[in-house]
Length: 545
Image (cartoon, rainbow, N blue to C red; front, top):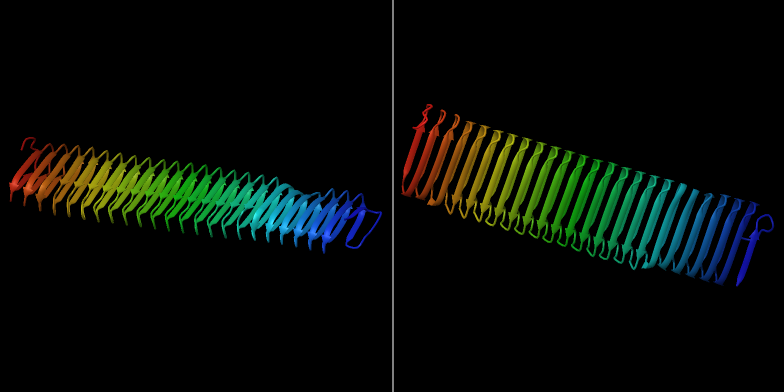
């Protein structure tokens, strides 16, 4: 056992150099081939080193006033290199084999490092005041942690435990930024966190799994980002935040090659991304503006995609995908206080494409089972409402276009094959509904212009049916129902005001055509049987044709 205490100005020994006054260096060595080199320039600097083991190495340079370096090395071939300029504090504990710790401090900062593994690397660079870095590497192999801090009162915590070849990089610039990066077990997992601003918070957790990647980039004030990955492989989270008070959370549990991307530019935006199991699923969220909310959920399945885009204020977008293969949700919101919700359960190659341009619009879609079913909803205006429900069947399409205000449209497709429903509304306070059930090649079309028009098309257990309704004017009502028929065609056209048309067909080869061009016309057609044909034309303002 060797013990050497140096009081500066009193002694100088090989490998140890002291200048100025009241510096103190204490070195204890117990073992073989241990090396220490210390240089102190300034006053009241403290160096305390304990080496117990074989071939451990330490080098220290202190310059300034009241720098403190505390080191304990127990093991084999551990290395510690520290440079302190100013009034800094560094404490390191190395137990294990081949660990390396590098500390570079300029200002008045604190660094705490604990290494109890094999071949771990911890590197800390601090510039500024009151920054604090804590790195714990426990019973792991070849893990690496890099922390860079520039500013005041930044805080970084790294925990790496029971892992292999895991990697953490933290870069902080500003005031009171906070990072917690945790890696428990796992192989080749990586986390990169960058903060530029003030009062930002980031938390990453990687537990188990392999080759997972978590990335957080924050620029602004008081943003919060959370990334959690559990027992998956090749999964990726990427969170990018700008401006103030944004919140983002990405959770991945199990699964393989899943990817979640969140981009926020504005204030008080909230985004959640949850991926449970599955493979090659993707969530992409982009928010521009203030007070927007996104919640994307994926469970199981493969190659499902949710792409949610918001520009404006107070918009809400919800996407839920359960199992299924190659299902897609794509939403666009430009305006304020719009709401869209899309749910997909099982099925394959189903798609939801929703666009809202305006304010206070509402869209809700649900797809259950089925293959290659698509829902297209476009809203241009304010206070429009649209819903689409598709269950089973294949290659069905629902297309809703609303231009104006206070329009409402509902489309229901149940166990159809190649059914097509199109609703076009251009005006104010129009209402349209389409129901297609157990039909094949059914086609429904509704077009409304004006105010307070109402139209309904129902097709039930039909084949190659075609129903069209067109209304231009105000306060018109039209209903067309087709059930248990073959090759039925119904066409209703109304151009005036306060017209009413109802058609009903039950049978085969039926055709109905109704044209009402004036005001106040009423028409009711009912056909039961085969080969029936009815044509009604009313061109003037006769109230009772």
